[in-house]
Image (cartoon, rainbow, N blue to C red; front, side, top):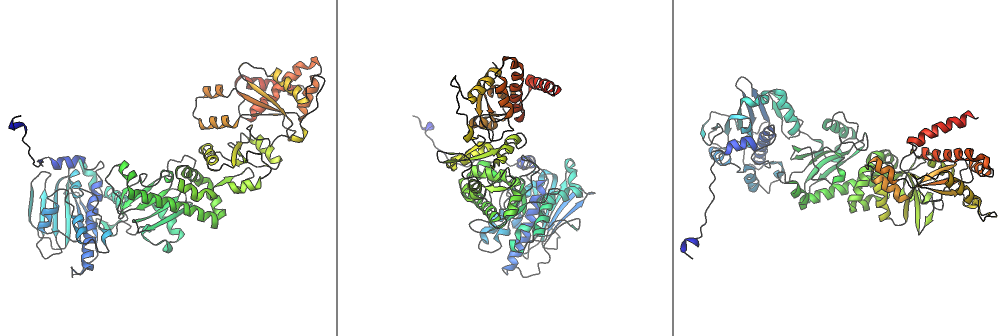
Amino acid sequence: MSEEFIRKEKGEISIHTENILPIIKKWLYSDKEIFIRELVSNAVDACSKIKQISLMGEYKEELGELEISIKIDSSKSTLSFVDNGIGMTRDEVKKYINQIAFSGAEEFLSKYKDTKEENQIIGHFGLGFYSAFMVSEKVEIFSKSFLPEDSVHWENDGGTEFSLDDSDKKDRGTEIVLHIDKDNKEFLEENRIKDVILKYCDFLPYPIKLNGNLINNQHPLWLKSPREVKQEEYKEFYTKLFPFEDEPLFWIHFEVEVPFRLKGILYFPKLRHELDSSKGRIKLYCNQVFVSDNAKDIIPEFLTLLQGCLDIPDIPLNVSRSYLQNDPYVRKISEHITRKVAEKLVGLYKTERAEFEKYWDDINIFVKFGMMRDEKFYEKVKDVVLFKTSDGVYKTLAEYKEKNKGINKESNGKQTILYSSDEKEQITYLNMIKSHGMEAVICNSLIDIHFIQFLEMKDTTVHFSRIDSDTHTGFVDEENKSQIKDGDNKTTDDKIKDIFEKELKDDKTKITINVQPLKNEDTSGMIILPEYLRRFKEMNYGMRKDEDANFFNDQTLVVNSNNKIVKNILSLSESSENEEKIKNLVNQIYDLALLSQNNLKGDRLVEFVKRSNSIMSGL
């Protein structure tokens, strides 16, 4: 092999910078208004640095009131950001401004990393200063350092060339002047700037003045100790964050320094309906600077219905979602939030049971979802989960089991938990169990059918049975079951079954007749389905209606042999002259059973109305 094919060289890739600022101008941030956040954050850093240096005794002069001033000059098309912070020397301007992406905050932190004010330096937002070029045709910097050096003036029109000379600036600090280009004149409007400041910078620790008027809050409630905050303050702060929202139910105030830094307040909102998509706005801050109104990558999925704010100084902001989800630091924060939410719920249950019950209808969705998604959360809150019962009271599963012990059917070591998925449609069945001293739990949310199956896996001593299913015998009068047989060796119930099977024979619908003496004599018949089919139907709620109808053609009609009308049908069957009357009565009982299930439709509904009118006309 010749020498030319085995040469090996090393070197550095050259990057031509002629077009770097145009690229930054177009692509640095997706939303142009971010430049205001970046420049204000830099000004806050400058104020925090001079304060820190003063506390260390390296700056002997008076600090004065540290503040950030924003000025609009429409006549000159300029927008200026002025601070009286640490300022920059000529060499610092060369180092921090002319070298793109050199982080001054990182160097400052490394120098003063052992000082107590470390967490006040933001320094976390990347190419912050250069965001000014997204809206400007020219940018100027006037700066005077706290050091005894001449002030400087830097200027750039978006290309690679800059000018740097002396300035006549007398006061310590930095002024950045943006010459707004013709496409971004909106940033010369006072209301536009004010809205952006209130969105991103409202809670920064120094006064921010716009054309001389103070516009920011400076004192976010989450920085106070929970012991110092009154209930009304929490409510007022919630209203400030989320205007026009209903008053929150309750809240959790986070104050963590070790092993990570986390401050914030999460509110439990009142839901307007089960799928209230307006909820779930958790504002994320970094050292009081607003970053995002979507903290879904940081908190557990089941807590996304909560509202509020989290301030996490050390969160990695400019990384992918998958990185956040797998980052150990983020996982620790997520686990801590989950634990605190569980502790809050258990504490409310134990100390304010009545209030907890009032909140339950609003919070039960995320509690149930959380239990199914997070094993640790399940273990912490499983004993405080409430069920509203058909008697209108709230009970834990343990309380329900104790109250109904010996009443509900027990088999294979499991106690039956009766439930209703729709109080209105199942009112007939609810009234029936109430008349026999029984009660059902109400499971009428979209998540409940999944939740009860989850509970059956976790607690093998219980089985949930819908009040109209065939898996419990609470409606049957076991003592009065017919045992008397006639010459054909058939019981009374057998005869009734034969009559109903004959009259309801239908090629389209397979009806299983089950004759039982029900405790409630007023009920002539009721439709039941196997519990597993009930659940399948509810879990596949989005199924097409025609498929749904075909799938549930198999039905069981329980006929009450204790009912007077059913007994009358048996008597009428002794004469062949009563065939038409028997047919009408049998179909009427079946249709009434369908009607109680809200399942009487189509031709059967038309026939039912016609038959009912005929029956009434004969009275």
